[in-house]
Image (cartoon, rainbow, N blue to C red; front, side, top):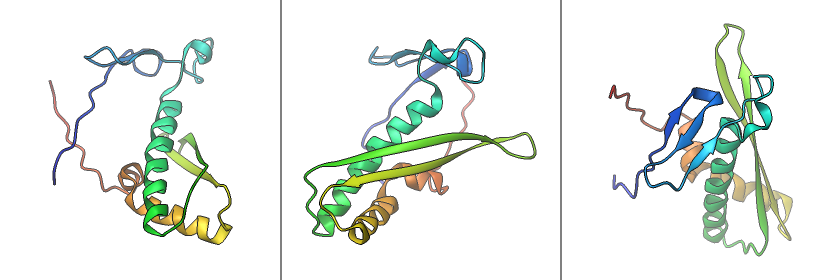
Length: 137
């Protein structure tokens, strides 16, 4: 496996705090829909994840279309990320990915979406294919 790059982001204050990176490209105050008065302070973690997932999946979608000989001239990907509470008091995420592939037959569009889902790193991570290393600093 060849590393292409590593992104680093630091969280302070958890869901109602801030996110930043060492280079200063990211400096975000988070909003928290679960805390009164915090929802409109900024994006929440699920919104940021939805944005990252939709962008990554869109790239995989374009690659899959090319590999399947499908020409995409105008496409959009919309990700809906939901925070759920399970019956044991734990939490998990669920995701819906919506793709609009203008001019592509719905059956072929579904094939392209499935192929993209097999190669997208975010899709793989949600299937448990991403190694997670825990490090105490």
